[in-house]
Image 1 (cartoon, rainbow, N blue to C red):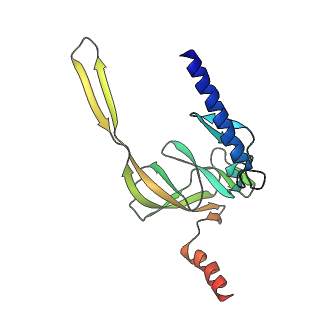
Image 2: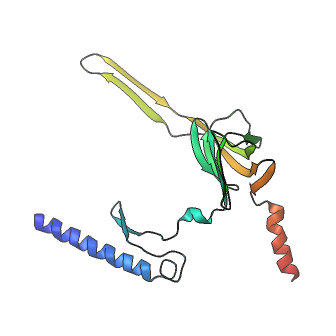
Image 3: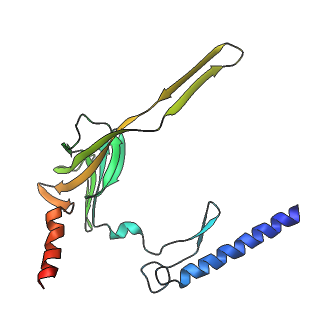
Length: 187
C-alpha cells in the first residue's frame, strides 16, 4: 500500500508539472500574454500558474468602505452584498464612511475616514442568506435546542465614487456605452 501511495503522488506531481508547462507555453499565460507562469501554486490538489501581474493593478479607481461593521473594497459598476440598510429596491444610497480611495495611483487615506469622500449606489434587491443551524446540547441532561437563522442582506450596485465633490470613478451608463458604437457606425 505504501508503494502505491508513493507511485500515485509521483504520478500526480508529473501530471501537474506537465499541465504547468502547457500553461506556460500557451499564448495567454506564456511570455506572449500579460500573464506568465512563475512557479506552481498547489491549491486543493491542482497546479495553478501564478500570475506575474496582480489583477488589482488593472483596476484604476476603487475605494474601501465600512458598512455593517465590515470593510470592503468596492469599484464603480459592480454590485456587492452588504448588511441590510433601511432602503427600498431602486433607491439611491450614499455611504460616507470611506476609509481609502485610489484614483489611478492618487491615494487618499483617512484617519479614520477620508473627508469629503462618498460612495453612491443603487439598491438592487434585498436577499436572505442560507440557513445556519444553531444546535445547543447539554450532555447527560435532557436539554437540546435547535434553531435556524437566515441573515438579511442587500445587493448594492455601486454607481460612483466621489472625492471632494468631484466624481472620481463612475459606472458606465447606457448613454456612454452607445456613444462609441454610434461613432463607429458613422465612420
